[in-house]
Length: 478
Image 1: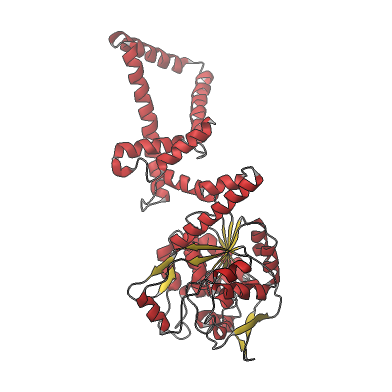
Image 2: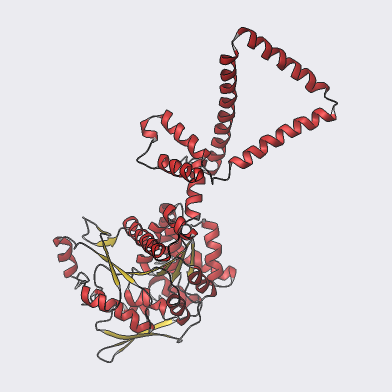
């Protein structure tokens, strides 16, 4: 009980609402002292071990040398203490000496750990204590599997990495357009574009790495139009033997938080059948088709899933699908039967993040229920229990801008969604660019909302079971 109360006190001191550095260096130092004393940092025990080792070393040397040097040292200390005790009363000298000793201990720790922090973080963004606390919190976060592709998945990961380091992104490999398509045709590699975006989103130095990975060559025979990230992953695939090993190696080199996995290592091509009977082949063509999609599949059919992706789903505490293009980013992953079956078998919170706007040609006129029905129809089973939708509509200027491109807000047909057996999680996760009048999901708000949904689902499960599991405690501390 006392440890739990102490943990809560430390947590309260560390929150923004508590004592902060802005209230003065004295309070900031006080807060950091309590953070160092907090259980679970796994540092104090080793520092104590060092002190015990130093004392034992001194004692060993003294015994080895027959106590002669240490005898004179103790005698000198004894005389000094006796002198101080005669001059200054013990009720004053004791606390003074004790205070000096503690000051030297903590000052030495602070300076030494500060120097270590400078080596680990030369930019000075975080102290060693901050890094230890962050590492502890993120490693205790829920195991989250996010499934999708395109910019939607990378936006989601950018926010989720704040809450957990136990992230797995399962990414589609059906892209056949742009730089990825050219590399796919020229080198026979799986398209690296969506994987590149996810790796950049999960990196600690995200801004610099994103600029580097997204850099496109504007000149040069064969290089024009290619992004550096795509070329990097293609080279790594050639060196390591396949895309899976390339992604693992790249993730280690770039020190990303979490991991990125292709849904399959099979070279798949998407196809779609339209209501008018036309057959559309290729991911890039499906995304711009002018007609209603009634069926979607891939060639070869039923590709095998990456074993690591299946293992991640089986161990997941939380599964998220989307946001992203319905057919070419979300459903394309679920065309791998083992992935769909693994998701359906999991009794954990599972949610689909619906797009804010329809996509011309791919989801023209679609409602939220239409999105859900399309996923159910493609997979032949129910894969998620809830759907996250945008709560408030975009501005009039933004709606007009999208209307010019034949794109409109995805209508929430509540009754139809409920008849499909899904709960509705309505939140404000939209971000509008006031200059371009284009919308996107705000990564931080989206991630915060999804973590809130997860915690609420865990609390409901706890009430039903009448007990608190380790997972519930981890979720609340994430």
